[in-house]
Image: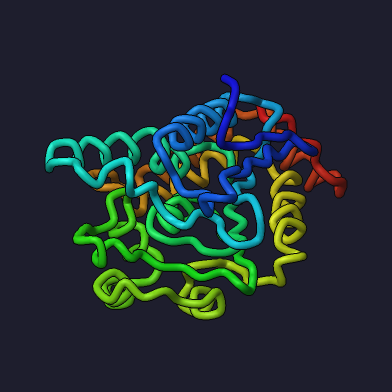
Amino acid sequence: MTYQHILSVLKEQVLYVTINREQKLNALNKETLAELAHVIEYAAGNDEIRGVLLTGAGEKAFVAGADISEFSDYNAAQGEALARNGQEHVFDAIEKCPKPVVAAINGFALGGGLELAMACHIRVASENARLGLPETSLGLIPGYGGTQRLTQLVGKGRALEMIATADMISAEQAERIGLVNYVVPQAELIAKAASIFAKIKLRAPLAIAAAIKAVNAAHTFDVNGFETEIEEFGKCFNTQDFKEGTGAFLEKRKPLFIGK
């Protein structure tokens, strides 16, 4: 697939994905969402890729929201289909990706942009970042998992306040309430995200995929997270990486994992 709205570059086993609509503050339109769905599916199935770094072009916005002009005249059925399709193919796909996805939030992350960041496994924000879910000011609510993931990350009270007031919060506030993992100067943003991947790449890929599945199960309806953990723990014993990891520990050397 030839991308028109995102850039995709593989460097040192990390796929750098940049939403490239800077003049539109990287707003999510249908084509951009389709390209994101494709690139995440590609990353999930490519053994060369150990993780995905997701960011926005420029220094103003990660993603300033969805392209409102595309759905301003929708009815209820069309709105529901829009949310269902986006959640299934993009936002849920990111959350379920067996490769860690790190959001490098380089400015505004609003509406669908914050929902995109929250779907990622880890979030790093630049000091100038502003985050919020302003949908109620448009007569809507978040439709790409925002009500659920924000509540999981910051708690019911803070989530309802952010959604009901439609207020933006600073990167510093976001770190304080657990919405982002780190806040750094913008010039250091990508390097900080890359440093996280440098540590991740030292660990066993199949174990990381199992951990993602187990952690996600903690908030998955009708799934027993403890049972998922037990099952994934057991599966690790059948991997070559487990033999390598335990062997390296006993032999007092660094392990060399191959993802098998």
